[in-house]
Length: 207
Image (cartoon, rainbow, N blue to C red; front, top):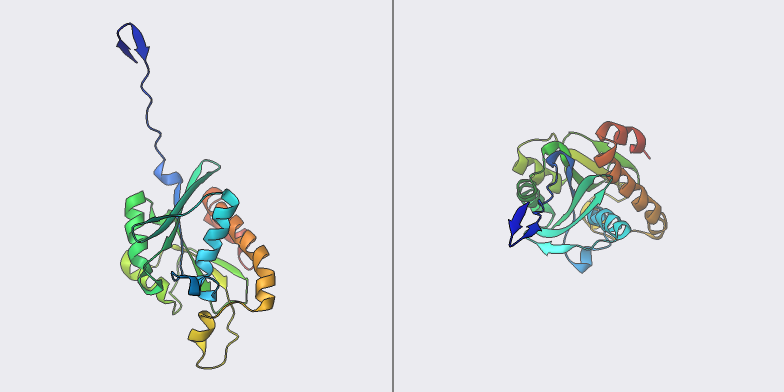
């Protein structure tokens, strides 16, 4: 406390976030309205769901759009890179340093052709699976040991049509099922920060 002309002034300390309680959640996708409802942009869509539930908005920042909320004593920083899919790692690396988030508190949310539509799979390490976004993240971080949240988009496309499929929009059946899948995905992300990675994998993998 400080005394000033007979008055007592109190100095308020700036609240600091415990680095172990801060999580960086990065949804992968491509910027622009034409990509908004495509399968490849499920990472953005899941983060949009989480932001809507928490009633927060994204702000355009360096290398992406950022939002933040607190839940059960944890701070969740949401990032949608503006670098386009193939250069996602640049944004991930920058914001990990900026937010001082440890590798174990990083989660990358992305689509996966090898999983049936809507199936969730969370892993602490693994290959990029041919996904260009994950490939760049691994190159920038120089490790494959980071948590990735894969959302199944299935592989129901004819030979040679993979690019058109992943950059195509959801069909009617998928659109009908997507709202419930997005809500479950948002729960899984909160669980990652509060219940821990092992409990989260046990509860949500394959769901």
